[in-house]
Image (cartoon, rainbow, N blue to C red; front, side, top):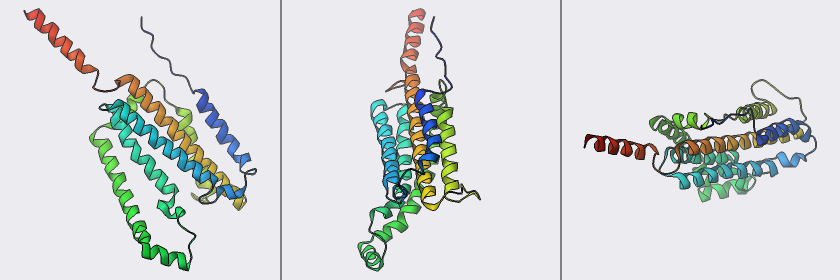
Length: 236
């Protein structure tokens, strides 16, 4: 008799992620405030995590196409690039510090023109992704990927980290009351953990969707052929 897989509340990696979130508040007092600056260690770590999410999505797409899992992986890939672009201020952090000479250099090189174009382009890409998700019913793949195990703890950490980061910035009419340097470090730590949680959620959804649908062509096709063959044999 085939056993039905059981779903646990959380897996060890998810508990470790929660522990890291709880530790981020005291650690914000230990880390050098320089780590939280734009283009600092924590922001670079965020970009690395987002890049890992993109690479993981593309690897899954390459392994499983054509399939519903591959469709979802291909859809997720540009989302990671959008998040990375946001963290890099759409390339601005890679440029020299602003100043009169730097501003003149940017204007002559055309980079400022690119800055004006990239944000509307990002909005159009988001709209295209939403349309694609609706057109190809990717919500069905996500639901299937969460059927056996839903990483609720990862979702909770992502939400809590996003709220903590927002409060550290002083938005939503809330404040953590931290000194400026520590507040920036906590903000970047929270964002880093939120991105790690999203990568873990993607991993769970894609792996479980792959286990359900399998790579390549849908598994239902051979079964239909077999039924047709049986029916034909019975008719003879």
